[in-house]
Every structure is written in structure tokens, then in C-alpha cells.
Length: 338
Image (cartoon, rainbow, N blue to C red):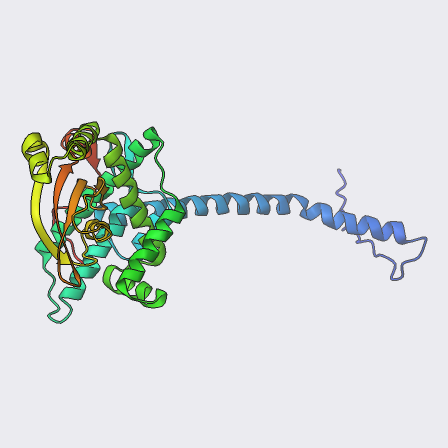
């Protein structure tokens, strides 16, 4: 008959209570044995933690991207948070001639127009949605032109220095009669722009102006011919008659000194009565002006002028705008909630 032996339970070896030179190896082995038991579970826990962290981060990133996309392209949010996102991250609102248009440029101009409209209607509380929709279109057109102008500026090596921007901004502030603090506050109240945003908008304007003059070879030729005729003794009226539809003649303009006309009256006020100016480029970016100063009472400046209009930049932009080389990523004609 097969004997059945009952296996005695393994007695747990007790460690000596005191660690001595003779027992230190035994204690060390005990500690290492405990570590080996936990080795693989710890590795598994760390691996799972890393994997879960990556998954959670990826899901959060996708959710953030989808949220931003919906905020900008579906709801067309124009609030402070949306604007900050577009300033911090390059997000396109359109494309023209293979150049992406920054969403931040569009919001820069639209938010300024919206602030102006809100100030005008603050007492009534009503929002003229027809005007707002129109301002959205204007903001988009300006952002498109800025991008087109930057591409041409790069092609022709045209730049606008920070010093020029600072000088023009300071000149504008002095003409307003306001202190730096008051001017910054007025800019914020009227346009909802910081001074950095004011500088950015001014830089865009100056760059577009320089580009418009540089690319218009036809206007350059006409203004040279007008200058030649004047130096030959022709009056402005005679120049206008000889050049016909290539120029515009306006007589007997009287405006306050420092009139907001792109700098034309300011340039003319530096002439002596009867003197004819050199071709003047105004910030209006609409052409060259050749003016003769006339007599006027104190506080006013009077003059007549011949204008050689710029057409090339606007003509080429219009062709691009109406072609399939311009794509808008948002609709701008529907009614937008505040």
C-alpha cells in the first residue's frame, strides 16, 4: 500500500534579531529577495503610466485642436480669447496667390471697427448688424491686401523700419495734443488696440503704401512727365489739360492746418505761397500729388493740385480677389452674433 506522506509546511526562516558581521550577508539577501518580488510589477506600473499619459495627452490635444477649429471656423468667435489664440498661433483665415492670410490680421481690423460701432451706439444699446457685416467684409479685404502687399514687398526687397514707425506714431500723437498715456488710452477706447497693435497696423499700412508706389510703373512715368511740364513753365491746369485722363485736377482747396488727409495739407503748409511742390506721396496710398500753395487765412491752408492716381496694385489685387487664387476659410456675409 502506497504511503501517503503529508508535506510539512515550510518553516519561515527567522532572521537573527541582531545584525552582526556573521549575519549581515543573511540580512542583505533577505532585502534583495524582497526587491526581486517587486521588480516586474513596478516595471509594469511605470509602462502603463507612460502609456496612459501619452493617450490622455493625445486626446486632450485633439480636443483642443477641434475646439479651436470650431471656435474660429464654425462659430467665428471674435472675442478676446479667440483673438489671443490667433496672435499666439499662426492660424489662417484665407489664402491669396498661394499666401496664407493670418486670422489675427482679420480680427485686428474687425475688432477695431466693432469697438468704434459699439462706442457710437453705446447710449441706445442697439447693434446695427448691417454695418457690422459690412465692416467684416472691409476687415477681410484689408487683411487680404496686407498679405498680398507683404508678398510683393519680399519680392521687391521693400521693408519698413521700426524707427520709421515710431517716428510717425510720435508725430501723430503730437498732432493730437495728447500725452503718451492719454493717447494710449484713447487708442484703446476707440479701436480696442494696444500700442503694439497700433504699431502693427501702422506697419501694414506703410508697407502697403510703399508697395503700391513701387509696382506702379505707369503712374511713375506720368508723374515724371507732369514734373517735366511744370519745370518747363506749365501751370497745373495746363498740365491737367495735356495729360488728360491720366491725372486729376482739383482747384482751390481750403482746409484747416493739419487736416487729416494723409499728410497732403501738412506738406503744402511748408511751402511759400505760389510755390509748387515736388510729387507728394500721402499715406492714403492713392497717388502722387503736385500742389501749389495759395493764400489763406490763419489756421487754414489753401492749394490746388494735380493728382496722378495709383492703379496697378488695386487692379492686380482685384483680379486675384475675383479669381480662384483667393479662398476664404470663413463666411463673412451672414449675421454674426457678438
